Structures are given as structure tokens and as C-alpha cells.
Amino acid sequence: MAQKQKSDELRHVSGACRGYFVVAALFSLAMNLLYLAAPIYMLQVYDRVVSSGSETTLVMLTVALLAALAALAGLDTVRARVLNRVGVRLDRLLAGRVVSAMVEKFGGMAFGAQLLRDFDAFRQFITGTGIHAIFDLPWAPIYILVIFLLHPLLGFFALGSVVVLVVMMLANEWLVREPQAEAGTATSKTYGFTDMSLRNAEVIQAMGMTEGLLQRWGRDRARMVERQATASDRAATMHSVIKFLRMAMQSLILGLGAYLVINRMASAGAMFAASLLLGRALQPVEQTVGQWRALVSARSAYFRVRDLLLASPPAERSLILPRPKGSLSAENLHFMAPGNSKLLLRNVSFRLEAGDTLGVIGVSGAGKSTLARLIVGVCRPSGGVVRLDGADIWTWPRESAGRYIGYLPQDIELFADTVAANISRFRTGMDAEVIRAARMAGVHEMILRLPDGYETQVGEGGAALSGGYRQRIALARAVFDRPALVVLDEPSSNLDATGDQALTDCILQLKQQGTTVVIISHRPATIAAMDKILILRDGAVDIFGDRAEVLAKLGPHPHVRAVPSIPQAEPAAAGG
Image (tube, rainbow, N blue to C red; front, side, top):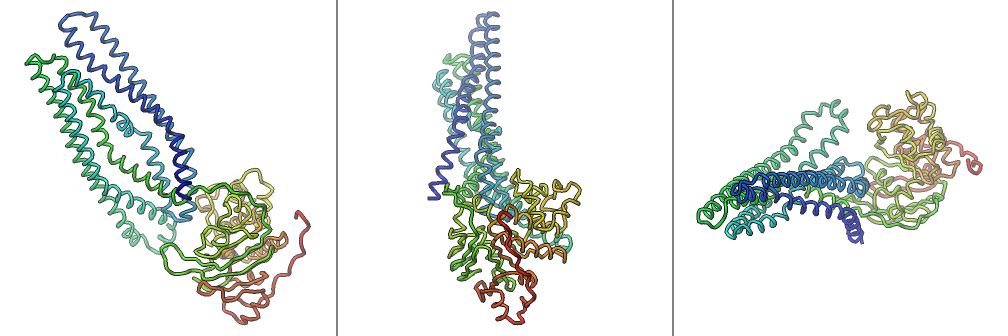
């Protein structure tokens, strides 16, 4: 089914761009017909003007030649603009799909961004000069046919020359394809590792990891450069050979033409015209080989992007479900990371009614963060299902389900935009909800003290803000627009005592508005506010139940101590 969806998508994109390519091909035909003007001019000058001495004929032929060349230049400009529009059209149709597929498949992994570079590389190739030679290549038979009209021997020589260069072009493809593909793969790994290193620059500098990291980075870089050099050397050698053959053949046809002139079998004009026509017929072949490295890179990039879209087909339009009340259940959840045979979660089951709060605890590596990702639907279970109001959270369309879910991951990332844009999840016209979410997170007053308030730019990843600021702004984003389910993974890791109190107050307000809350935390004060507690051990449920019962069973547990709970607030009035 996914394959069918992807085929339909490619057919749609191809259909949308096919008209541009048809127009470019028609312009190429007209241009290649106009390229005949120069050989015809030479033929007429040698065979008519020189022999007749007619200046009027020379002037008229010259005017006709200039008009043809002007039309040729105009058509070349228009063709380039048409192909540029293909790039614009392709970007509008597919760029968003590529980014959404990257988010779905790679999540936070830095090397996924290389696929957007691949898409841009392919898009730029089809709008660049390299594609022009490919459009001119099919029209080479026109020149061969005209050379046949001048003399059959000249025609057969020209045809053989084209065949030889085409064979050399195919040999170039065979020699360059493997190292170029390997260089593309190594390039993706190198840039991905570089992006990831830059994201952790502070850690690298603080712990003196630069030298070791450069050695690790250098291995991928050396592989990339070595494969690129191999491909470039082979391509350069073949290009030189083809250039030699093209120049030799263009000169040899002059010699063959001279032989025919000597034997009164052709005119002098035909000799020079044949040389020009053969040069024009062979030029696209030589240009194509000269652009072969870019062509192979663009082709490899195209296949990588195609594979990405195949792996993440567009979601079928489904019935829009109503706003959930917040009933959450996990049914026999199993999860195994791709490429890993170890189960991170095993047979995890629990149920929360709408408005319940759950604290998830366990030692490091118990599977708590994995469970959080499964609950919000960013990972697909290997077995079992997570249901929100009875609906499978994984199959629920993300744009529909996401607005009802709040999520604060353990690794907080803010986007390089304003504070307001980050809190509002980039939705516009909801200023009142932005301020309400900031007040719930206890960060409203702090935001007002920023240089530009809510319009303050947070920088790349929130670099302009402290860790506590980032965490509380991310908390405000999680509670924005009254979600039915909120999942907080270590929400107090960067908070001081004031931030802890703000988090506790936020949880109270979420309870008041009937939001189902799941919190992963090691802080007893946070867990003590929960209605239920779930303890994970080695990816499986160790204990699950009401808070008081679980704490009674645990006694002096190393991860949870029985501390006074926060009083349950009175239910808020409707609409509060």
C-alpha cells in the first residue's frame, strides 16, 4: 500500500513538471535547427558568394545569419528560465514533504538533514548548465543527417564518430559510478557527524575532546576525499580522451572533405560545413561527460531522497477524530530499537482515566524515556498499542493528534525564533493562549524581563537562554492550548527551587482542567503529586497502582520516598 502511495506521489510531481520539460525540449529542437545557420552560411559563402562575387548576396546572408543567432540566444535564455521554473515548482511540491519525512524517519538525528541537501543538489542540477547538454544530446542526429546530405562518406564518418564518443561516455559512467556513489555516502556521514559535533561544541571544548573527535571525523572525511579523488581522476582522464577524440575527428573530417574536394566529389564549402556540423554534434557528448560527476551526484541524491519518501509515504486522509478526553492505555507494549535485538520495553500495560496523573520511575536504562516517546506517538511499538480515548496513537494523524498532546522531552530543543513562536508551536493568532501557557509554566514574568519580551529571539536551540529558561519555556509549549494529554520527561532537571514550585503549580492547574499527565522524574516532590505510580525495571512493569499503595509497598525505596503529597485542588469551573 505504501509503495502505491509513493508511486502516485511521484506521478503527481512528474506530471506537474512534465510541461516545463516538454517546452524545454521544444526550445532545444528549435535551437539545434538554428545552429545550422552557421554551417549553411559558410557553405553558401564558399559555394555562391566567392564564385559569383555578389556583395548583395553576402550582405543578405550575413543579415540572415545574425537574425538566426539572435533568435538562438533568445531561445537559450528562455530555455534556461523554463528550467529554473522547474526547480521552483519542484521545491514547492516536494521540499515540505522531504522535511516532514526527515522529521518522521530521523527525528533528532543530525545526519537526516543531509537529505535536504541531497534534494537541493538534485533540484539545482536540473536548473543548471549541465542539464542543457542532456537536452541537446538527442538532437545530434539532425547534424548527422545534414552531413549525410553533403556526402554519404562524410555522413558515415560523422556517425562513427558519434558512436565512438557515446561508447566512451558509457565507459566513463561505468568507471565513475561506484566511487562517486561511495563518495556520496561518505559525504552524508561526514556532514552528519559534523552537524552533531557542532551541536555539542561546549562538551567538546570543556572535556578536551577536540583531538580525538578530529581523528574520528577525519576517518570519514578521508574516505570521502579519497573516493571523490578517484572519481574525479577517472572522470578527468575520460574527459581528456573524449576531448582529444572530438578535436581529432573534427580535424579528420576536414581531411576527408579535402580528399573529396580534390576528387571533385564535394565542394569546399561542404568540407568546412561538415567540420562545423560534426563539432556541434559531438559537443553535447563532450559537455555531458564534463558534467558527469555532477550528473552522478545528482542521480545518487535523487535515489536517496526517493528512498526517504518511499520509507515515509504521505499519510492518507482519514476521519478527523474529536478532541480526546484523555483516557490513556498501554496494551502489551514491546519496543525494540532498529538494528538492535534487545527489547527496551517488554509487555508494558497500564490504564489511566481522563484527568489521572501518573509518575514513572526507575533506574537509568529502565526504558522510561522510550515509554514516553511511545505514549506521544513519535515511535512505533514493536508490539502492542498505545490508545488515547480508544484510538491507536501511532495511526492517529500527527497534525490532528499533536494539538491535543503536550510533550517535554528530556533533551530540550527550542527553535531559532521568538519566545512566542516557540510557545505557540508556530501557530498564529493565539496570543491569549500563549500568555496563558506561560502563566501556567510560571515563566510569564521572566519572559517580560527579556530584552524584547515575547518577541525575544531565543537563538539556535535556545542558546540565548539559560537552561532553566529553556526548560520552563518548553513546559509552556507543552501545556499550550489546553492539551488532553501531557507527557513530561524529567521536567525539573534544570530547575531551581522556584522552578520546582512553578512545575508543581503547573501540575495542579493541569489536574484542575482535567488533563491526563504522565511525568518521568527522580524527584520525590514531583512524584508525590501523582495519583498513580508506575515503576519500570529492565523494560518491564515492576509495580503499578495508586500512589499510596505503591509507596506503602516500597517503604524506604531508593528512588521514591514517601513525602507529603500536594493537596488535590478543587475542580475548576467549566471553561477555566
